Length: 196
Image 1 (spheres, rainbow, N blue to C red):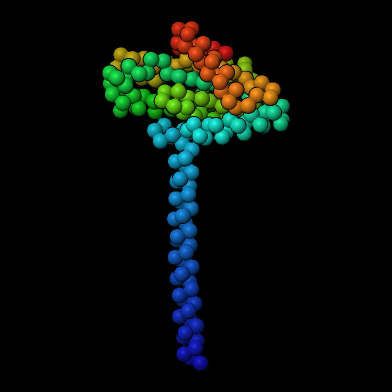
Image 2 (tube, helix red, strand yellow; image 1 turned 60 degrees about the vertical axis):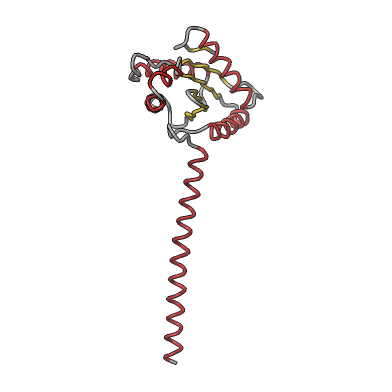
């Protein structure tokens, strides 16, 4: 009887040990899954949403705007004359400038707004429940805040902004294309400008 009891305790101990090991493995797997999700949806340099996350969120926001008849606006932005900074001062200084720009842009946004890196020195802001007028005000605040960004050498950092509001029935691709067209108008208007 004593041997049986001892054997039973030994088995319980082994089961408890295996349970702890499995729990640890599950925690490691969850940590890896969270890290992979983070890598899949965040820009490695600036730590803001990447293009994949932007496209996913923009589709959801267009659907929400359609379903609930709520306004939705978008700001497409591009740093003016950024290539010479990388060419003259190197990519490390250019990357540091992008991080500083993102830090400044964040200060002008609401918690529900999504700031994403579209690519290179291009960014997009999704403004749920914001009208065109409100989005234009945000763009004006962003433009003003950019004055705080330290120049790179003798190159002052400015941005151009294309601002649009979602139209009934419009999908995320059409909305983004209109924002991009407005951005090119802003660039054509002498840069450091806002266009709709």
